[in-house]
Image (tube, rainbow, N blue to C red; front, side, top):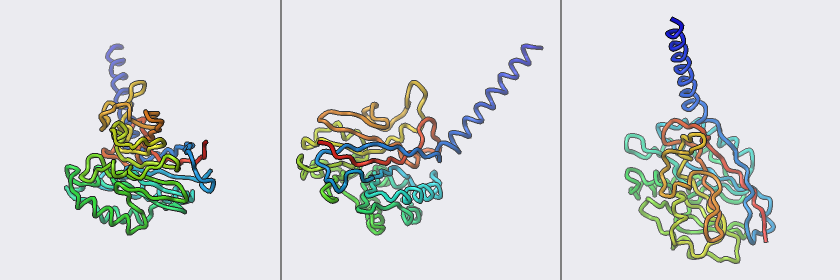
Length: 282
């Protein structure tokens, strides 16, 4: 009788623990934003930008899984920080019934945080629609973002008060051309690269670039098992899960965990907004 009672109590405890964990991964962590604060050390940074803030937002995945109000509320919080530069590193949408949810994205991007100096974006694989090969879908998202004052870099660069920012189109999309994107790199100038998929860091396309690469894409696997890591990460280089990675060529890769999600759960992989402080180094 005692053994039966003990087994019953164990089973009840396991059930309650599973229920609590399930609710946490479904209802709490996906909306518990972590604001990471990082010094972005940059060679040749103009003195006018030293100490200014650059905020990275990635993978909002507007569609049928992510709560639009959650994204809009987070956008409002970011706007109160009055950053100098805001960059969006791809995956603005997720397909709904096989279609790009442009109307929903437009509703959200009305609230999009803007930089005092500039607001930039690149595209991610989901922005290319079904099979990541729909160029028309990518073009439609580009037009929408441009209409809200967000400049989309598609294998090109722009300069903000002496800081050159390069933007690569998505690795899995139809317009990926990193050689073109990096063709204007000048090592004597301050530079940052935006690249959605961190696997691109391992390709021989960088034109001897030295500096920071800001990426997203992985969501840190969304589920990270303590002392082990993420069992599923959508990259070839499984080291590229989240955070800072020192890589060859005096480059620093940063992988943002994303604000949205591709499946409606997160565990030990909180959504992220990255607040970079631009810092001049010799």
